[in-house]
Image (cartoon, helix red, strand yellow):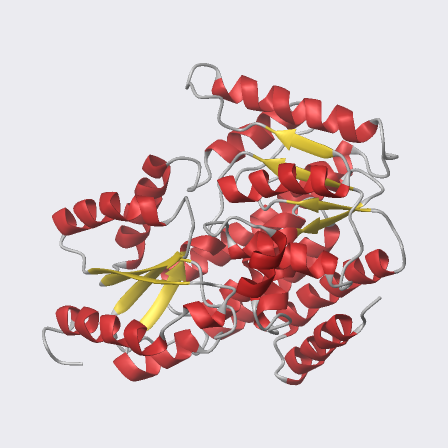
Length: 395
């Protein structure tokens, strides 16, 4: 098994410790522990982002969230030409590069074949479609959770039933090692810390670096595990210390929508330096502060999913307007993932609504995973015009 990928993750942890970014170091350390279990032969499930972590935390099986591991692989450029791999494997040309990179990691020996795939039909169609395809390709189980049943009538009950059915399927295969009480307690503690983090971010815009938030937004997948509580508490402690010296110099406040080019993590700092602005929030680090209960575990998980800003385009629009109001946003950057069937189609709706509100908006396109699909000069040309609008011709 290829250990260079593990070595890069270990180096990243050491680097974050040296920079005293201890919450990110702790977060990565837990991901390294997951990777070690897999490399040592422990069965694992490849999971899509919005399958609740609380459900998987109950069982004695490692859950590897595909977008997270592929994202780390992209940041470290483990594949120099995904387009070549796409052509060799017959992937559809419009398919999302996240799943393509994950498949590459299996075929190149970076990861062993998973025991099975677990997917939810939200928010990314490409993700669950890939899981269904790959389960046939590799001859392994596919566990599917249907989130949107096509109607609004009793949607919570329908989703809760789907969650319970998935729980029953997993229970028939894997031993349950944690009680619902333990998982609910850990999830609620993590959500409480995340709620307090957001309170500080709304009260003190820019107090948390958005690059840090992008590195850690998949902590959402760890809800229900004690490790998530520790990481979020560390982030909260750091922000509380920064409150003492907080000062905001009235720079333009920007909201970032969509994803980030993972091979160019410095891009936020470059934007802030060049245009004398501050990116004060990013939608991917935003998730509902919904507490769970033991008695209504599945129903509460269903309600939290329904409150997610990506549940429907309308939910997302409501969340964006709320962030504009709370943070007094001056402009919005929307980074659309190439070939994504979720983000780009919503742009016209956003443009119309934000135009009505008088909020400058720019869409830039690229690929979070494939560097050759990102034109940096074109990206900054778009931003030049965007910030001229914000600053009325004065950058």
